[in-house]
Every structure is written in structure tokens, then in C-alpha cells.
Amino acid sequence: MAELALTELSLSQFRSHPRARLVLDARPVAIFGPNGAGKTNLLEAASLFSPGRGLRRAAADEMARAPGGLGWKVTGVLRSLHQVHEVETWAEPGGTRQVRIDGKPAAQVALGRIARVLWLVPAMDRLWIEGAEGRRRFLDRITLSFEPGHGDAVLAYDKAMRERNRLLKDQVRDVHWFAALEGQMAKAGAAIGANRRAALDRLAAAQAGAETAFPHAALTLSGPEGADPGGADDLAAAFAEGRGRDMAAGRTLAGPHRVDLEAEFAAKGVAARLCSTGEQKALLISLILANGRALAQDFGAPPLLLLDEVAAHLDAGRRAALYDEICALGAQAWMTGTGPELFADLGGRAQHVEVVEEAGGSALRPVAPIGP
Image 1: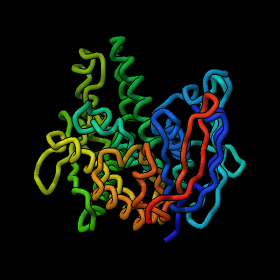
Image 2: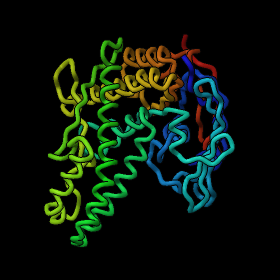
Image 3: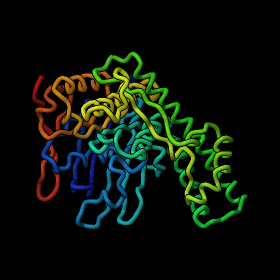
């Protein structure tokens, strides 16, 4: 199978790193150091090799090293499907994020065509018990990994919906204006729904019969009536029919922006929101691994995995099992933890990097592995 690996990563004025450079191979990357040293900042930089705002969902200015008011830049060499790409992404003060691939300006969506990047961060540990917005975002990241064009559909839908909501708040009653916007929303919304359902089907297939130490998570879509009515014609009809109700509310009450994602611990028949904290974490890890297995088949190479503090809440057995599954998948997984002992089971199967605080910033120290 082909590989997907970030073999060089350079940071300039990015978060806590004034300058940093890593030269790597395709093995997993174990990153350790004290809290606040700048470990997650490396994962955030790697997450920018995919479309969107990265694993922290930060604005471009928020990624700049402070103080200083300078712009930031992240560059990398990406080996993907037997090709090598040089990727640069940066932002000047007050500017938007820019991307260049192999020396040529590119839209962010182009990153999704040359790489697939998945992540799991501590903020997601409460995914199943907090609001639906976070679960929709999680669902759309999964969907985007299978269909890079999904991001364009989401942007088109959101833009048209904002315009429709403005009309609703202003009590505008121009039928033709509404119909035009609803037509755009219906076209994009139907694509969003189809992409999401296809992604869930791929995850279900990747979990079926998989040999894994992590529990099977059964996923379903839910939401209020009209959240996922199906095709474009059905959506357009739902929007038109709901204008009166929506005008009273001042916003659009039906459509794919109201969909929720539900998960069940399949072996127990228990909803994820009712599971223990450890079980909820195990379900998330299971989904990330299943997503990786499916992408290895569909994309032709396993994705980059960014797993922040993933080992912190796993017992020794589960931790070793996770490392074994990552290595069996062949993924370059970037993992962070507070100490090198958390990665002892990886031994020489991984590259080990220490992050330390130095002169008011972060510095990197490649180290020899401990363990087998």
C-alpha cells in the first residue's frame, strides 16, 4: 500500500515556536514534554495540511507567536501516493490563511486531494454529552476525509442560509428572492446529506468484522423534522413550507444544519452519552481507527493521524493495543503525552521527540526511544 507521511515540518513564528524543524520518516511520531511546552502546537501545524481552520479551529491571527505582531508560516514535505509535494501555508498580520502547493497558489480544498488528516483532541472527550454543533462538526470532518468537495457544499449552504436568515429577520416577503436562495440551499443541502450518509456507510463497513480492541460504535443521524428530508426537491419544498414558521423564529428551522449524530456502544446497546468517560473515549478512538481503515482502501494510503494526549486516559493494555493497531494500519500518527514512558510500548516503531520550554518559547529535541 502507498504511504502518506509528513517527512519535513518547519514552523516560523507559529504559536510558541519561534522556529522549529523536524525531519521524519513514515513511522509514528511520539511527542512528549510538560504541559504548556508546545506539543499540541506541532499537531495544530500538521493539521493545517488539510482544508479548514485546523484542530483548534483558530483564526489565522491567533496562530501567530505573541508578542511580536509578525505573520507565521508552516511548510512541509508531504509524501503522498508515490508523489512528493512541498506545501506552504501562512498568514500575514490581519490577513487570511494562504496556501501554496509545489510553488503554486492553491485553494484549501486542494489540500484534501493530496492528503487526508484526522485528529482527536481532549476537547472532543465530551462530544457525546454536549451540544449537537460539535457532533455535526465531527461528522463533517469525517465526511470531508472521504469527499474533499463536501467542504464546498457546506460553505455554499451556509452562505445561502445566512442570506435567507437575514430576509427572515428583516421580515422580507419577496417570494422570488426566497425561492432563489432556497434553491441554492436545497442543492447544497442534498449534497451534504448524501455525503454524510455515504461516510457513515463507509465507517460501518470498516468496523464490521474488524479485529480491534476498541468497541464498535453504531452511528445514526437524527434531528428535528425536516433536518434530513433527502433530495433537493424535498429540501426546497420543506424550506418553502416553513417560511412562515421560520419568519416568526427569525431563522431557518429545518435543513441539514439541524442534523445530530448519535452513537451507541453496539455490544452493550447503550447510547454513547450514557457510557462512562473511558467508554466514550474508546468509542471515539474506534471511530478514528475505522475512518483510517476506510481511507486506506478508498484513498490508497492511511491518513495522517493527530492524536493529542490520546494515551492519558487509557490503561496499559488499551494503550499497547492502540499502538499495535496504528502500526498495523501503517499510519504516521502524531501522538502527544507528558512523558516518554507513555510511548514505551512503541519503542523503535516510532520516532520520539521531546518538546521543552526554552527562552520563552518552545524547542525540540529528538531522543532515542525507551522500551522494546
